[in-house]
Image (cartoon, rainbow, N blue to C red; front, side):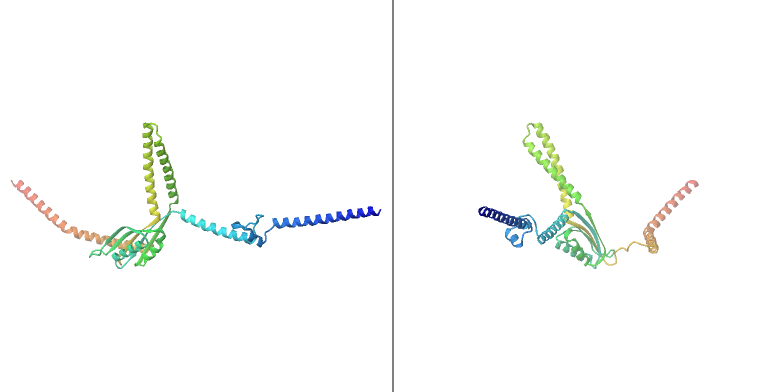
Length: 310
């Protein structure tokens, strides 16, 4: 009995010890598993070499790191988007500026200098020196780089008193993209025809390919010329500059009844003055013609009387 009791006690003790050990192992395994699959500690993140993704072995990101990455990604996307939008937009800017200056000829030379300093060029330049009958004036067509237009217009305003400034922008992005697509298509077609020409099996095929190639090349050169002209208009804004002497700029158009009445009266007086001037110019001719006509009539009457008397 004692031996059986001792054996049962030993078996029971062994079973209890086994259960305790099994429970301890299970608890350790559970804690290790949760530590591996949960958030990674800062020390472990620093030693694991996550890279730019900010992820540990489990693929999860800490809140601070995720927010920082999100902010950096947002900034990068916004910057790229704005750059792409600016580069993809094609705009042609034209305008006109009228300025009253002390000496239009000197001001025209100053405008040329400002344009050349901005990297532009002069397409046309007309100067009218002062005479006894007319004041001096000048007109120029300036081609100014689009990115320097605002700065150059500001500098031009300092030449004298600004009468008006007008700037117009036309978006030709669609036209530019269409030309690029057509040029690419024709270039591809031309390259294929050149490849086929080397493989032509007969003279008839060669002549047909050469004819089609000539047509494609002509169309391609025309489109390339249009694209070059369009690019020049996009890159260089066109500005018409008018320079007048003081007191020679025409008054503004009437904007109400009274100013219209005054303008009408002034135009009537100017018309009557012009009519009187024309009459003064024509009067000597009219008197001379009248005298000659009177002499002719007198001679005719005298000849008629002589015939009747005979």
